Image 1 (cartoon, chains in turn red, green):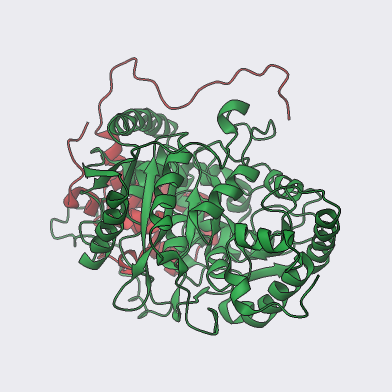
Image 2 (spheres, rainbow over the protein chains, first blue to last red):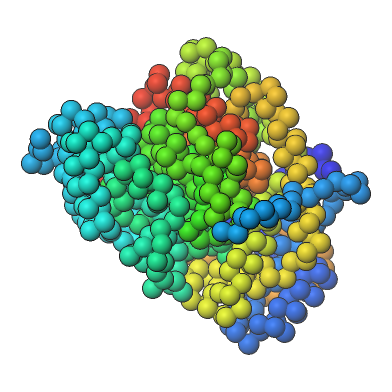
Length: 102
Length: 490
């Protein structure tokens, strides 16, 4: 596991945090970061999205898409870097259904 | 029994004070409800705070409360108290728009469980509160991402309330209702409560039912109160909380129930988080330290604490993105996401639909690891404290963004500009791990906008977070400051 979350590490995730901003765009987050370089994973993901939904997107939206996807990929890299033992479980459990069908 | 008019100051009183006046018959629930409705009609549109009013329902409930109290049938502290509910809670007979154009005509033929719980407690629903579209579930760029327009902060209407419970924050701050309900996936109660200068609470995950509530992320969504004080929040939480078989993630009955009379830990052990919001203006941290000095003077112990290391901000964002892509799958697949106001929200769902299952499982493994580390912190503290936010409210109209840059080739960019967002926020990890948090006012900044302090407690220990905030408020008056007129009392 990473020992700390450095400014630089989070900078890698900056564009994505903007893209996500699911609940909280702060004043600082409102500044648009410089365009990130896109990785091969981003390139492939963008191509899949364009193949599937490209006809719906405007030129401006197509132009914006790589930055959004690269942000996602940057965040994923930080998460993927954490190593776990085989038995380390996820925070997901199967709740047994015993007549609870509401 | 009823005064002809309700003076403005009454609209800013806390729940217990209003209840005392109901019971000594110096104030009528009907008169109070009518006064709030009038104020909502007058000031609500200026603030873009209201999605819709519910006057017929409100007056019916207020009349019932008045009759019941007169007959000695007392439902408890919320009996006759007017409130607003964020417009992602289903209320039969009224639209539930989720703040978004694609759902502007949506109606449900039932009430959300929390609405029913508050009905049973005798509370009076007067309005649905404006909100950021889909509570930001598909991402958003700022205040304009709302069906009702940007919500203005009552402390200074050039500024935003923060989101996504934007209307709920403005309504309480401006005295349009005694309290409001918000939802918090990652900061959507804490941020607007802090920046509107009110008290707000994110309960422990699973304590309050989400049945009848729009989903962003099943494993992170919480519903909570926004009110005048931590004491008010505790009274509201006691009425809202409880096991609900209709919410799959609802805690078992013994864990879900909450009593406002829960004993506070003594002496209260407070950890001052020293590794959060490193780039916040010093006055925000100074305000927290002043507030903690008040707690220390009342017998609390205060010592330094640090949130554990790890990519928790990334993890919380990713969990939200992935679960939201599933929750809003129909909206995305149909292409109706193009109807959203925010340019980011219009396309972010397409990108979020491309995550891999393997990455989601990795996130959930990381989440458990982080939750265990965070839990260990509470072996030493009852609560940890930090600024409510890393900044005061932001301007609604900021300089326009530059045009989108051309697509760059796939090569490393060592010159990538540093991102300016505060990386070490307590919101991400505490939301990811389902911990309760209470934010309360801690003064005003030089720009005369509110500053807050938040107390975060161990999962399930909502009473500890409330106890810390109540201790502060019992010995300070930060929470008795209101916006300038016309949004505060004249």
